[in-house]
Length: 604
Image (spheres, rainbow, N blue to C red):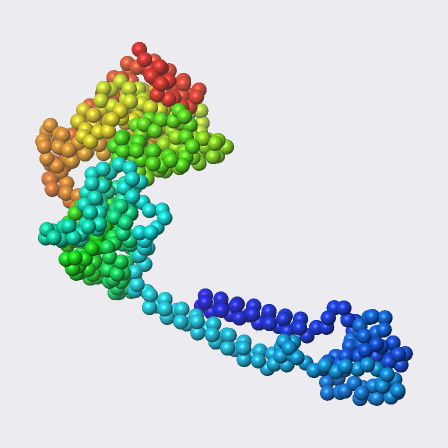
């Protein structure tokens, strides 16, 4: 229907243009004056005419004074008949210089033939446009089962290689083997080695799985076919399988090459997990992918890379040897990798001379590569909004907090009491964190609302940690309870502002018992089997593998851990009330406290 309206619009515009052209060609020239027959007779009788030109129904008079006038006569009537009918004397007619012209050239053919040909031309044009629309619909219908993969050829100008990917050293070393297979497969085939068919990239969102896949193709200098797993599945049965066949057919024509299937868990989930065990379109697509992987000949030089952040939901047939048997894990970068990633993304950004990317890397533990790129982008936006030409540390620090917590909400209207409570709450977090030995140092305190928080205390580790002790978790619970307990100590009541802190504290205490086996009473074991209900894509419930008696003991142990952390925090709050007051007064005055100022306030 859309193409029908489009073609009709084109047809209508062409029709209007032809009519306008025809009207223009039929109009008299601008320099000749249109007059009546009586004027012609009068000019002849007064002998004012130099020459008369007769052309069809048009009579053009060239007067002796140089002017031109035009008279229209009836069709089929000659000039002599016209003059005789008006009683012009023959002597006057004989004195006239009369020239008769026959129609010729473009004007003649346009005026003579166009009225007859125009309807046929318009009908033919209309039929042509309609046929073209129908052919386009047919071709699109035939293309419905074809692959929608984006192809990046090896001659692309902006080629990505391993030099453009910072960090992930082990992943790049693993993929270098794939590059060698693509560059020189004969070396391996001569030794009887089998070329790997599938490599699965595993990692959290933003760790660079897609970028690393493109870099592998760029390093090997081969074509790269990129498609998302969701692009295979359609509402029509068989379309996904058809697109899989078409994708591998294109790849075989461009061998050696790399096929990259992003978010493969969209089609690679465990089969038979649907309600009733239905064999749906997604399962047919997965079956076709498995068949295509098995159908490679020994010398077929095609590598299939796939990426997912949900390896636990993938079908076991995908992961067996001979298919995606190689798994490359991409973790969040450590401090050195974060600094390298920041250097890559800072190449085209004008940074101030005092900017330390190492300091930014220290302040962003747990950030992925995409998060770090977003930090530098947000810093550039903040600097541009301030009409600056360079990016300094203040914009970078603000960008980190914006990515972590959200934008500042300085316009939020709060009462003086709420502002005071927020200041005491954040001061309590900071003081407890400062005086406990196993907690991360405080980098910033603020009572400016960001995102969903009314205020925040920013703690950053001095080094990347992969294992944590029981003491560290207990002290973290004490820090979370610090704001709640400070409010209770100052105002003898509590507010709803500590809801999130209490939820996190309870969650940590439960994980200490059920996941980490750190309970002295319940011993070194886990509790609860958290199997996922795949057909809904999320965990519905926990399968309990313990009795009601054990459940009561878990609740008692949670209470014990929280009570222990509470006593720890209460003692610090009671002993350091003067320090809390100093921090609160500074917060109420300036709204934020940086690490250096905080250490000055709390030093003994």
